[in-house]
Image 1 (tube, rainbow, N blue to C red):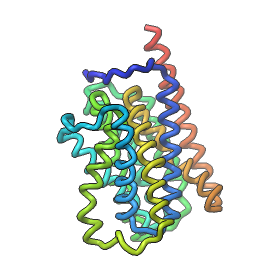
Image 2 (cartoon, one colour):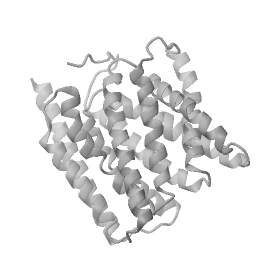
Image 3 (cartoon, rainbow, N blue to C red):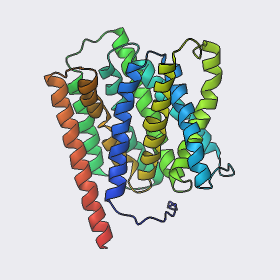
Image 4 (spheres, helix red, strand yellow):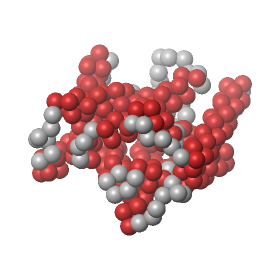
Amino acid sequence: MLVKYKHPMKKTALPPLFALHFAVFLFGTAGVLGKMLAVSSLLLVFGRTLFAALCLIPVLVYQRQLHFHDVSKRVVLCGFLLAVHWLTFFASLNFAPVAFGLMGFASFPLFVAMLEPWFFKEPGSAHDAWAAVLVVAGMAMMVSGSSWNDGAVFALGLGILSGFSFALLAMVNRWQGSRIPPFKLAFLQNGLATVLLLPLVLASGDLIGHSAQTWLGLVLLGTVFTALSHGLFMSSLRHVSASFASIVTSLEPVYGMLLAFLILQETPGIRELAGASVILAATAYASYQHQAHEVVRQGH
């Protein structure tokens, strides 16, 4: 049985759900901002992890958490998984339209639904499993009108690898979140990912030749859309299952599609809207079942 990290705030169903949905909204916004920055996927991931870790240092100083005696092999594993997740996802965007990488990443809830009961020795949730299937169906619907070529298949494979690595990361985060405060965990993971990526960035020469506006964009991406979003996401995992969190995270392409329409003037088609509706329905269903379960559990 997990030993929950004791938090001074009162545990209720609403704050964790709000934190989770707001984190996912920031995830979707990060995708749009990343597309606007004309940099390589390697520099994009390195920049967001670097500035995320740097901006969290004052937070940890204020919380008196800037010490490293609780760093374990699992935290190092989280940093590695975070780097793999972002590198594979952003690399998939170089081979095909965004929809193919997102379809591969949509496998994330299925991986969580299969692995979480085994990982935590808990009974699986049929509601979350069916919701995960609906999410994948919705993503398939969103890309059903696109053409399939070698680049698209490769992008899909990278997206699936991104989804699998993020599923592992979510479950390890849930376990670590019971022992390490969320913003410290976010700092450790982003800091370790930065260290792991530094030799690759130096070897590629990607650090030179960029404007101040590009670096400001990376700072914004790292602070608001990485540090804040991942701190909120890991905080929510102390109260909800990784399976439920994975279903809500599937709203990321829906938020991204909406923001791309508002900011980049990318108009979605009928298939994209229909797929987004299926994902919204699956998420609403999972959220309703989660809240009903919380009401029953608190009633006992």
